[in-house]
Image (cartoon, rainbow, N blue to C red; front, side):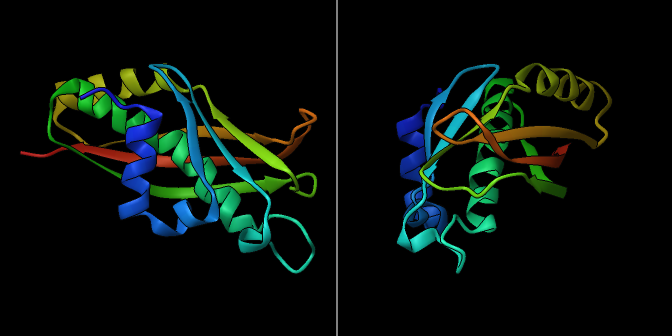
Length: 151
């Protein structure tokens, strides 16, 4: 099964309802890149009239996690995945439509290959950058993913 934005968004509606109802949506995914968008609105705002940091985090994590999930599915192996650590930086108020992009698909291929060859768990960092409609960066998130081949 190839991952598509529609399949991921439907999955989120049932399995990650907080992300879905906050407006987090995958717009594009391929082998190397995932783009996730979320619009600032009443349900996902903070008291300062901008997007709540946790909503940005959900969108940023999805941009990285969808790539990991896609690569795991491609491998045909039974592999677990988990966020082990994360951090984020905020540089501007997040209002309007925010687009999160992760371009770390090649990195995942290399780490998965090592995990499959050695049978040992691997960790790796992925980055997701959020920009507003003017193309100005509003936040930057890093996620440390942990993967392990199940036996």
